[in-house]
Length: 277
Image 1 (cartoon, rainbow, N blue to C red):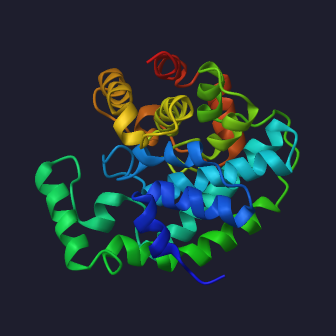
Image 2: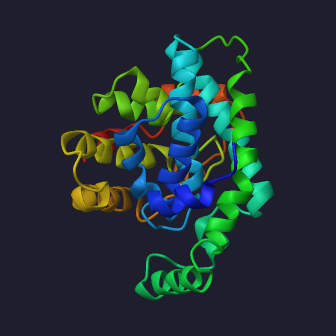
Image 3: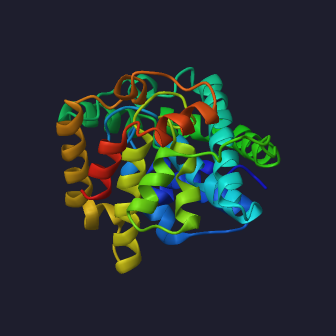
């Protein structure tokens, strides 16, 4: 199939929705509401400049496919986390960074930063802007990495894998499919220690509920106030810190390490707060 990433990006409007759509299409399972709900993850998670929205969107699609291939939710979660880690490494190789702020050179939390990115996009005639070029460049590699990762069955572990994002999803009333979709967000997306995966999951799930309740409006028009409140509650609880490695006080080398941390109550208070925001 020809690489039509730029065309899809222009139509979807956000990098996060674009890659959720592209991988869903590649796997043969489109999901309109889920894809639209990925909009707030753009700009490095609510425009905070952290992990690029392409990664959040791709991870959601990988989690969905893992839940279809592996009926055991624990196995699906492990595959989603491992594959997301592979996507993070692949993306870093293409973009030289995983963070939106470094890739775009813009602080999207300010009006001047947004204007700067818009100017870059307009000067690039949209289709040749930095984000569009990166998306087109990474698409084939994202497909390859996702497909390879999804075929690697994880080794047996004494304890079932546990994702902070999946646990949060369950506390918010999500089913196994949604919990698997966000599993790869664990440990700051694929255990990378970056912006909190449970925060990303809470934002996406809140947006998803809104998208499912009203299919006629863009998600950004409908749930902006709710997801902004989640971010405010989170910032207050963490004194403005958003990085998993700093909030947890550690980096997780393996899925088992992360699972043990969560099982022993790590980030439990924060997960409960997000579940009820």
